[in-house]
Image (cartoon, rainbow over all chains, first blue to last red; front, side):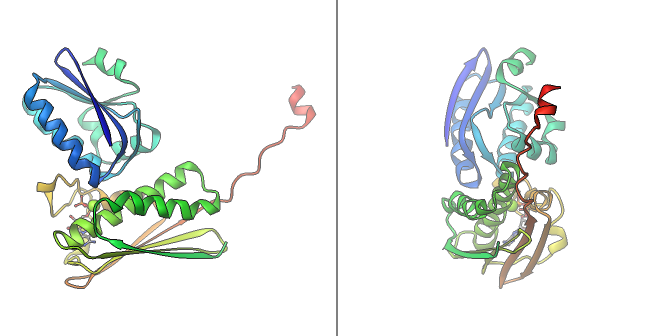
Length: 111
Length: 154
Ligand SMILES: Nc1ncnc2c1ncn2[C@@H]1O[C@H](COP(=O)(O)OP(=O)(O)O)[C@@H](O)[C@H]1O
Ligand SMILES: [Mg+2]
């Protein structure tokens, strides 16, 4: 799992590359918590354009960060998910909790 | 195609990707669609993760997967652990129920398995372990459609 971070104003874009499962979730969680603590992050976009696989462990990671960011008055969005990951997002109710965009540019415009 | 394999590994989280990739590679013999293969990969990942974190927890045990395919292209995958077992199966299978919310589990594992596979059967006994049996029938690959010169001209 590789994660690329980029700040766009106060919006953190986290680009996940690889496979998000229970094993890799620990790394993702740690790195996100760390950067959210150090930077002045208000909103968070999970960019899944290069995420090849995700199971329900990913749902836990997204909802965990949603609680934190939402609690501080920010927004969380997901972008670039493939059809399979999109199905898991729908199934778990994530799509009722936050907006899901085709790509990060659209997400950045909307936030 | 009749075929069968068995995979045995330690309950380490680094084996989660190994397990789902291996089952997917085996099932690939049936020429499944990418979507069917994703479904199987995800369901296996859920069952194996459960065996590792809920079945064995802090202990290290053995997870066994058997995968069988029959002449009708039905794939049967069994994921088994000899860990803690499940006291209340109906509760465990309830969407969003998790016994480990502090681990950021979503409680969606069984729901994902049920959605992505044709059937999911769970045997479990406290102190004995858990066996999840999942099936999915892979449709034979569609024959490439060949357009006749007539159709091509239209
Ligand atoms: N192999 C297993 N051994 C023991 N308990 C299990 C096993 N698989 C599932 N469970 C129990 O069923 C619950 C629901 O599982 P699941 O739907 O995958 O959600 P999650 O893994 O997010 O908790 C788990 O929280 C756990 O209590
Ligand atoms: Mg689970």
